[in-house]
Image: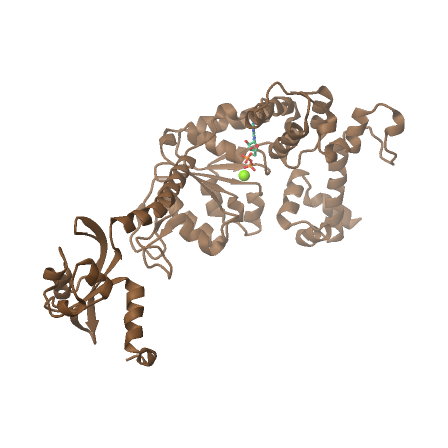
Length: 480
Ligand SMILES: Nc1ncnc2c1ncn2[C@@H]1O[C@H](COP(=O)(O)OP(=O)(O)O)[C@@H](O)[C@H]1O
Ligand SMILES: [Mg+2]
């Protein structure tokens, strides 16, 4: 026997058992009572000494202890009708030295009152759980349609038209655009316009899930796949999205290892759960999105070429906001309407001065940034017209905007720049020169050149492509 238990006086053990199980009964293989604690005896109106050796069925109404002592099969959390009420009984076979010697019975709730008390506490939890379950299921539908994609600039219109045209097919789609340009909105709209819209739309942010969890997140796992794996296993996002659409956001951040696994799924149209041994066939439309230049990543061996081709069947390029400034009033007004509903306001207008400032901004955060700017304005606005004063300082105090705001020449900033070109042109010209200079200084070595400018390799490649900088141009400089 465990040495520790030996140190415990017998009456202590008795009391501990009382506290631990509240009601407890022990029977031998023939179902004869060996032990039954005082409170249980009291409940069935018996004397603790009297019950020893009695048939358990004669002591406890509807008892099944004698079965368990015979079959060796536990019965857990069984509803046990007794004395016109119900209790929850656990019955465990008792094995000593691998031999079935009897059974132990415990009672979790001693009567309907206890049970009620318990369910009163559990019920709100279950309700809450159901609420979140429902909400989760609701979230699996697309929330936006093409009509909510605002913009009429030709490049944006073309992207929208292409996406709309291909929504009915099952081919993979690659959405490419800077952060905040509406990639997720496009993905929702495509699903919504597809015959799959009655099935789930499932989004996975490949950048936010740690590498070691992504596989089970995408493909699920089988019971016992690893310690702590849930009983019955867990469905992965691909299985959940079956017959619907899976949106793989930030695909450019997926590790090469996971890329290989994803490629297999796209080719075989079946998945294998982690720790599982039979493949499960799935029918899922894949929409991937990234702000990174995958072609350059392929060159740098950071993205698998074969996967790139698989995903790139249809590529939708979403232009940044700065390339569609004509759309700004339209989008700003649509966002304003949305915010009015959110804040229970109405009749808010945006002044022309503000529109001018909005149109002259570079919008690195695209529509998301515009949305934040307008939300800020609505929040600080007391009247009904948004004027420059409500804009965040970085827009309000932007020197190029000041020129627009104040026509007094003394407010113009002094600099060597000749303002014969737009700010955008000036910035781009400087940037292009910097890229060339870095390449010349690094003797044509792009990785070195990227380091000189303190930007990532892929950003550097993007810039080379954007500014159409050719090798021979650099060679000319290096020669000179
Ligand atoms: N063309 C658009 N018209 C209206 N709202 C847009 C448009 N594009 C983006 N938005 C809004 O901007 C925010 C960012 O869009 P999102 O799709 O999350 O961008 P991304 O996934 O490219 O970072 C969202 O709130 C979205 O509703
Ligand atoms: Mg996004």
